[in-house]
Length: 285
Image (cartoon, rainbow, N blue to C red; front, top):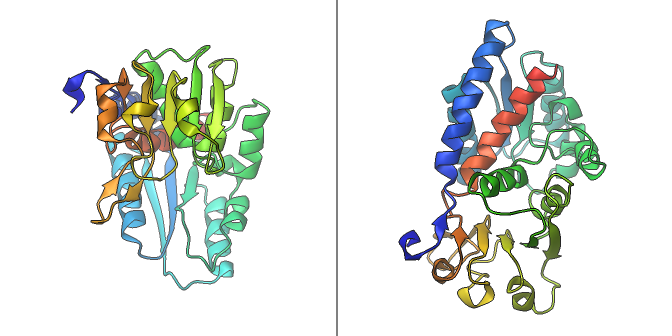
């Protein structure tokens, strides 16, 4: 598909480059007696969440980070989840950790995220760290937006002065994406679109970069893309057959200058920057 013309924004190859760097940095920390540790809190037995957590710990093994897993049954109460978070907050072997989202509906997701020690927030989603992002102060950055910026830079997609349309306003991608791209170091102009946006195609056709994270199958089609634009697909949904699909339709490859595959584009970098956040937290201790 990529051979039609668009350059593939290859997240897997870029992840491997990051892992080489992380392996060296972790080795230096380990030599100083400070091996980083990544913790995960997984509630329930959702197959997708289990696969994500397995992948994160497999990544840890590749670069030498210690794994700390806390797997809990789906029917736990909030107090049990809180106690697990408190334990990791107090665990000196745990440099940083994440609560795998989503948690079962009877649990308060926001309360769980707020309970994480901001100094151990590997996902960059604690309200305090999101506030630091707004203020442009140092803090762990949300992994997916950080991965997207890195991927665009890696393939020399111009960001400064670019008009970027972000589709989706979720806390993991859409909202922090705009904050990252409008920093002076990026200097992009961002239009944040969502379900209430009128005439989405009129906006995307003017975009130099489209970041699609709505979770609506093939919401971005070729007729919505300016020739030569960069299109980043971070959406995940299922088609009628139950197959995972992204937000970007296959015909976009015929028009765009750059496209991130899904899977294989941003996903590997989300996990790579989770590890990067943990290593940076340990280096900053």
